[in-house]
Image (cartoon, rainbow, N blue to C red; front, top):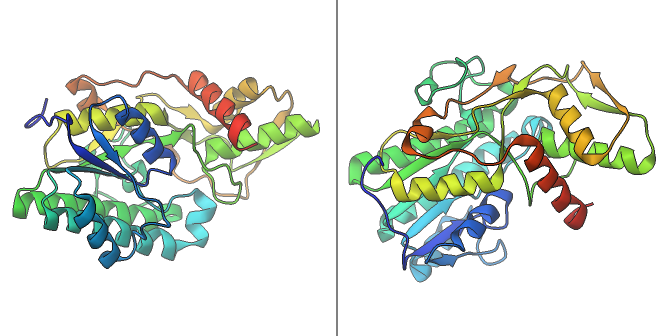
Length: 314
């Protein structure tokens, strides 16, 4: 426990971005709590429009908010749509956080991303590494937006005493992921490629980069559990890393996915494409010390994600 506990019992809890992978997982997790979960679809509410957000929130009267709504994507999407990743995310989070203050929301949790950290941050990356060096160029637009969200929560806490906190997840995957090869992250992209190759009988798959970068992957329902844990048990200025404490190379990830999918061919690596950050493992000691640890290992999580993909997206 850090700070005062927060009881969700009987609360009206808004999951902003409930149709996304992260928001959907948080909504599933909250279904086991004695609270009233609030949601709003994109048709009902455009989060980039401040007046619309203020009107909806004034009527819905949430007691607590999880800010899981965001424009997200992999290296290709970040490189080709910098305006969307910077500006839309600034609007979405700024509108929700500022309105939460205006209407007196009791508690808010903002969700960022491990890409907020410097490209060459110490490994594993502690929370204190924020703003100590240059960002990874391929996702700097998204990173700047997320850093601004953290700072906005800290500003409202400092100036107005608002109980606004931030959690920083590592790379996520699971049910509801984005499986579009033009905009997805590495794990779902490799899963789709392996599935398609297996169905087509292909013997080789091409992956971006060298296969050597190391990444940490967290099953999204584990993240949701950590978010609810922090909402109940954490109240402080500094953001909190949320990860597994383990990482693998992209090549090792590809082998795990092949094993789960049943693809028996080989991966080749297009070294003309960027690798991104060479290594990205977060230090989750702060969260672990509070009593929370991830419960799903990588192969188990990939199997669950692949089962969802086959039933819903393939």
